[in-house]
Image (cartoon, rainbow, N blue to C red; front, side, top):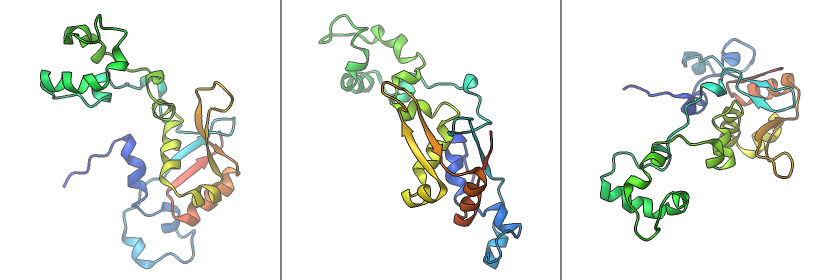
Length: 192
């Protein structure tokens, strides 16, 4: 069986593996059967200098945004199915068509194959294509109790009118790493 791992599914994978710190002997009471589990390198997040976590390995400028066709899940449809699905999404492209009651696929073909911009998506989805995205995905996968004990909170719009979202760190990286280790989460936070 082949496991397809991309950047988005990687965080899910780390929760099913053993913490490298635990296996190395830093935790004194680690179950013996855990020693036979595969050891993965921890995911590293960094403080951006303003108290928000980022993925230091992510290059924002190399990000390939999906097309509208991909984002709306319209790939592989017949022309008839495509038009039926697009009738539900007409508000997204009504500025491109001449008559909302009777429009042709040629009017929106270029739009379907154009890349999205972060502004076209919701705030959190748009931020998922930036270095702030992986910490947001991590935050969404842990329980509220764990996020509180780790010292994380999700900030959506840090001031009125803001289009920023990120995970803010309230503990020191040292305290955060200690709590992540205690919880068995294979993530390390470094100072920026």
